[in-house]
Length: 147
Image 1 (cartoon, rainbow, N blue to C red):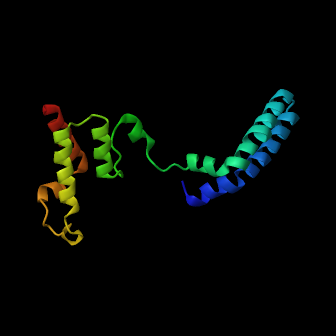
Image 2: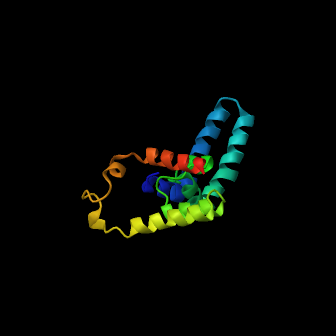
Image 3: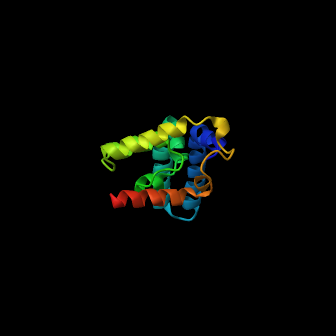
């Protein structure tokens, strides 16, 4: 979510809900729906407006969560996550054993030791540079299944 929208929800969201509640209550009253007008008033002015007035920042953060939640729910690793943190999480969850953890940790450390100016200059293995990330993950999963 855009930062400006998040700030507007945090700062003026309560005012928008209060004005919208007034308009909807008026329309429901003019249409002869007194019960609906009462429900709109209670929900709008006595529930939503105070929530946004006092906890607007938290509501804006919840609505503006830019992290992909689907990847975490399905157990798939996030593409933006830190590889070391992902490795630690999998080890802690028991998905990989000690030997596999050590092997992958050594590979991560070796990748971290590559100088930044060497990346993209053709010094790395050409097959891994052109191979899509999904294929690399599929090969890694196949290796895990074989063990």
